[in-house]
Length: 203
Image 1 (spheres, rainbow, N blue to C red):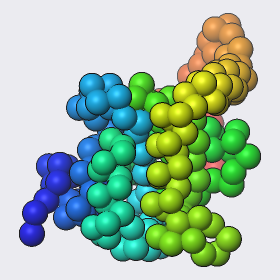
Image 2: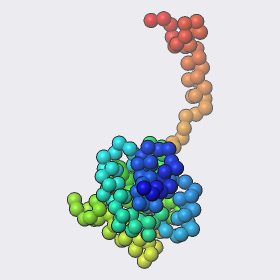
Image 3: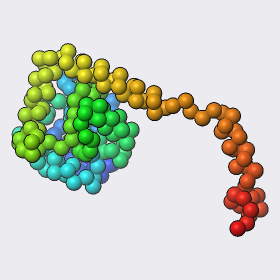
Image 4: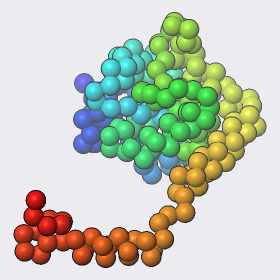
């Protein structure tokens, strides 16, 4: 059976998708260059090996030749193992939350060719059901919006970018002053028992 680029990866989750008819890339310079050179948006799918709905979506959509053809025609498709790249998962889960969506896996995000998020969701069925649109229909609608209404995409990118930057600033905080760290270190060193090891005296 033919394999895609994921056959070169070591992640068990990515290797599970190596025989999909989807033209998957792993996250990295090659994928971003392909998106930039083609001008196509990125379809980012983040999951992990033990994720039930990741397997369901893989079977229903990523192994489906018709849906894979839509994905390959309209997007640069990138697969990420959240256990390998928790940093990317955290960023794009935050972006999804800012869009008013509940997070989870598989995480399905649509990005500009520069990797900036503008829309997303989690599991999509192959056909409309469960009150959700079919995956191929979603992809066609997103691609059409990118072509016909790039200003709307740019507005989403700008709003999400600002909100994510504010979140990052709040998360960073002021940090612990150097003097406080030095005081804690001196106190710990004073507590170390150089003969018996450990902290403090014998029990």
